[in-house]
Amino acid sequence: MTKQYYISEVTETESSHEILRGEFNDLRTKIVASSNTITEKSGEDMITEKFSTELLTKVNDFETNLMSLQDLYKPLFKSDTSNIVDIKVFSLLNKYKKHIIAAISNFEDEIDRENEMAQFSRFFYEMDYIKCDSENFFDIINSLRVAIISKVEPYSLDELVCLRVTFDDLMRNFNITDKKFNDIMDKIERHFNTIGPLSKINHNI
Amino acid sequence: MSVINFEALCPEAIILDLKYPQGYLYWDKCGKIIKEITNNWKNIGKATISIQNVNITFPEKSINLNFSSESINIVLVNSKDVNFLGEFADSVVNTICNHLEIDIFSRIGNRFQFIKPFESADDFIKIFGAKGILQIPEDIISIIGNKIEKQKIEFTIYKDEDFGYCFSFAQFKRKLEAYTPPQVSIDDSKFITKGILFDLDIFTIKPISLSILKCSELLKKNRKEYESLIKMLL
Image (cartoon, rainbow over all chains, first blue to last red; front, side, top):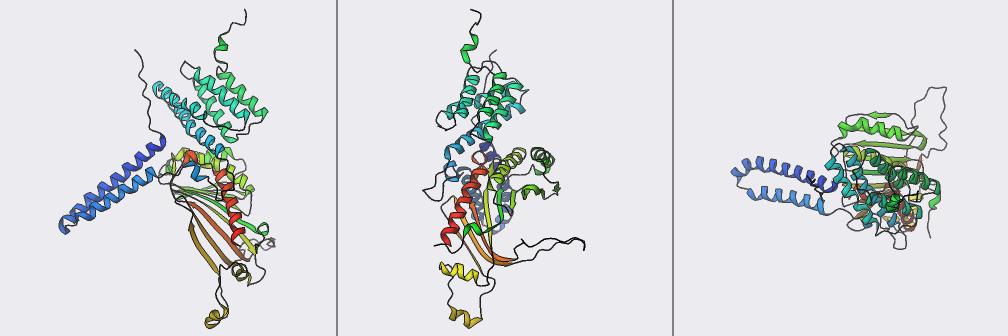
């Protein structure tokens, strides 16, 4: 029997919005319920309706009005340069690290774990659009890309922990020294196939 | 030309304040957070815990961390070292938000408080009068009294729909109160008792997702803006 993988589009931010929306709706229901007894007597249904509509508008504003990355770090003076590329890379690392953490916490549930990692693999496609100055950083990303894309078997816990530690290292500083580069690469090579199809070559021929 | 020398100002406090709407897990995860922070940062002080908030001091680096179900507050006292503050903030904000399952901040405020020791009681009027920020004609003051006391200027400017800037300039007088045994003396020669406070709060208006927040970058950007604005205004 083939397994059915359901890839959810709901991000953690969106799920947080959903919780918040739920809480507002609960509050709204309570207010409407308690107000009805008053409004029946006073005949001021319009006030209840207006209040609940305003609450929902506030929730919508909160959901749709998130500040963008560019706006948060835009300099006050146009002449100032901002390292927006670094911030973009940081935010991508942060966003996709959450899938690794979720995969580790749901490790026993194979479908959940592999779903999270399927969503994680989108990281490399998003990184394609970013150009960063640090060559060592991009060499590590490329090794991970080969390792993840050529992977056909389910993830082991060691592999997931290795990915998480690597992401933590990368997030600490993008300007990776040669020594740090070697350390990280050693770690990745111990757990993943970073040479793709070349690993199948028979060296004895 | 600037009437004050920015480099001569003394750092009083740099504050990073992050507010979030859903920190209900504070009461469940408090211990785990403190354990992780104390493991990550050696020489950090003991935590003071209450139902309302947790306070952790980092005496070596003059940092004070406060967090609760509503906000995280990190204060760097008497130091200009924004780089270390940023590194510390990145780490603790990440730890706290992971445990409290927070991914949206409703407001991020970053305050810079620098002070200029008093040279004379007229300093405030000299500085702000010279730039036309405070101009009350002498004849009007003389009708009411002799001079303006407790001088203070406070105003907020909204840059756009993303950021607001709250300026506060005030004259202050204070004294150091420390209770020690009679045989112990404290050297308070470096404690500024009279001066002018240059306070700027740079705050966000829209909610912010945790995924785009890097405190160190935000602090560096805001520190640069504070310096430029103070130099430009005064």
